[in-house]
Length: 155
Image (cartoon, rainbow, N blue to C red):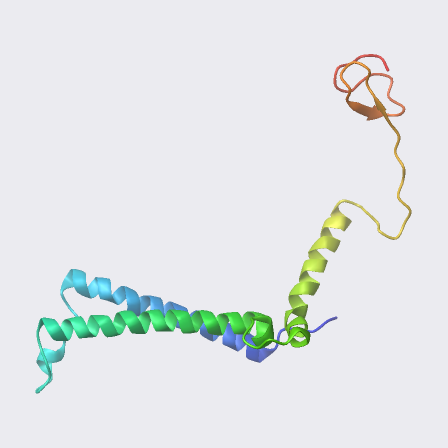
């Protein structure tokens, strides 16, 4: 069989997915903090800034950090799924073809499955089928049909 996706690429894909989930949770924590008026723990640390300004800085940091994690996770997942050349990080068509080979093979497999399901054999000569057009409704019928399958007129 052809080339398989390496374990390193699989790990990058799953790490990217994990980073996206963590980033989303960090980003959504802003809304939880705003709704419950929590998230400002600076009152408990001596010498730290407290009050509304500290809460805003905390929310801004979590918002930007969460978005950064989501973006980084998406990049990791893309590189893991398509490889470094297949994802367009480096421009090397030959390497991109190698990186994307499992997907190309998979697409060909889908076509082969569809042809098998339709019982089409590409290795044999095509069978010619003669159809007769109905003089009344103009629909196509099998050559051996005595009556039109649409309107019932005798052929």
